[in-house]
Length: 253
Image 1 (cartoon, one colour):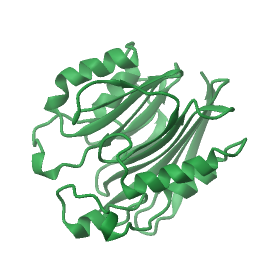
Image 2 (cartoon, rainbow, N blue to C red):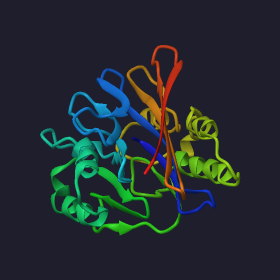
Image 3 (cartoon, rainbow, N blue to C red):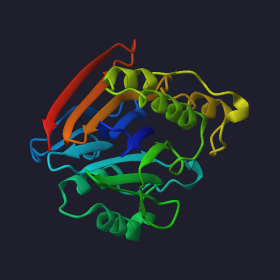
Image 4 (cartoon, rainbow, N blue to C red):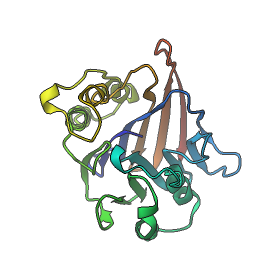
C-alpha cells in the first residue's frame, strides 16, 4: 500500500474503517484478495513475485497493512521483502506490540517501511525510520510513503474526505472508493522532497496514481463494526483503460 486512510474507534457503528490504495509497478505479478489456500483463515491479496502481501485480515481478527517509505538514495538491493512483515503477523500467534517489537529489532535489514498491526481492539504502528513501537489511540490516521500522519497533500486530502464520510450513520463502501479514485495532482509548491525529481514527485502526488509503468493497481475498503462484522472489498483496476472489477467478503469474527 502507498496510501492508507483509517479511522480507529471513532464512529458509533464502526470500530475500524480503512480505505487504502496499493501502488506498484504494473508488471509485478499479483493475485487479488482471497482466503489463502495454505492459510485459510487469512484474507489478503498476494505479491506473487515475493510471496507476501500489503494488507490483510484474519478470521481471528488480526489486521495488518504496510506502506513503503520513500528514500531512493538508501535502497538495499539484497533486503528481504517487506510484504512478509504483514503475512508473518497474520499467521502468527503474537500480540501486535510483541510482534512489532521483534520487527523493530531487525528493522534495519529492510528498505524503508511503515507497518500497522492490530487486533479488534488494539492497534500499533512501527516505522523503521523512527525508534519505538506506538500504540494507536482512537482517531483518524493517514499514512503514505513517509511516517504516520506526515502531512503530504494526498494524506491531508484523504483524511478530510474520510472525516466527511464518518459523519454518516451508515458508511457505504462506494463513498470510500470514490475518495481513493482521485487522480488530481498536488500543486508543485506543496510537494514533499523525497529524493526523486520534481516531475516524479508530481506524478506520485495524487491519491490515485496513473503513469506509463507504475500506479494505483487496487483499492481496498474494510468496515469492521462494533459487533465484529467484517466487510472487506478490493477493487482491481485494468491498467490499460482503468476499468475495474471488485470482489467482496463478509464474515463475523
